[in-house]
Image (cartoon, rainbow, N blue to C red):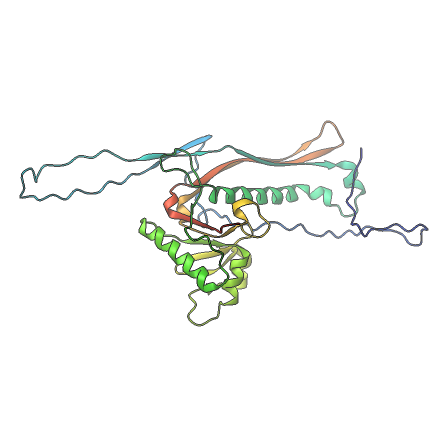
Length: 304
C-alpha cells in the first residue's frame, strides 16, 4: 500500500542530517464555499415529494370578460378553458463523497485526523450541494411550453457594474419587472465584488442599503436589506467559479419560486474488505430549479 503526501515546492532535505524533521499535529483548516441556500429563506423545499419525478401544477390565468349588459347577449357567459401547465422536477443528480480511511495511517499520524474523516466528508458534501443548487438557480430558463424546470430569467442589463449607483439601478429595474409580473422578490444574492460596493458605501447618506451586524453575517451570510430584499453575499457566483456563475453579479427572486427536491439517502462508515480500514461515505439525490421564471432574474454580464 502506498500512501502519498503532497509537499510544498520549497521543501528540501539536507544532504547531511543536522536536525530532526517533525510534522506538526496542527492542521490548516480547509476553506469551503458559502452556505448560501437555506430552506424557507433562500429556497423552498415545499415541492419535494417522495419519488424520482415530481410534477407541479402551475396555475394558468385568463382575463375576466367584460360585456355591455344592455347589448344583445350581454347577459350570456363566455366560456374559457383552463391554461394550467405542468412543471417537472427530476431528482437526477447523484451527489456523493466516499473516502478511504486506512487503519495504518490512523495509527501512525500524529494529527489523528483520520478518525475525523466523517465530519470532513460531510463538509465537502455540503459544499458540493451548494454548488449544485446554485447551478439550478442560474441554469438556462425553461422554454414557455417546456415541461422540465429551468433557471432564472436573464436580466436585460448585461453591462458590468462598477459603482453602487449603477448596481442599485439595475437591481431596481429587475425588481420592477418581477413586480409587473405579479411577483414579490424577497431575496437578493450578490457576488463578493458587488458586496464590496454595498459595504464601502453602507454609511453614505441617502443609501437605501441597511447593513446587518457582523454576528448576523457570520451566522446566516445575510449582509443587510435593500428595498425589502434580504441581501446575501455568496462566493458561489463571481470570482473563480465556472460558466455563467463566474459572470453573475446577482440573482433577485421570490424564494418560493426556487424549489429544491433533495433526499440525503445515507451517511455511514463501512468496513473495507480490500484493505484494513473503512470508507467514510455520504450520498444524496437532487433536483430543482425555478418554477416560475417570471419571478427570478439573474444578471449575467456579457463577455467578449
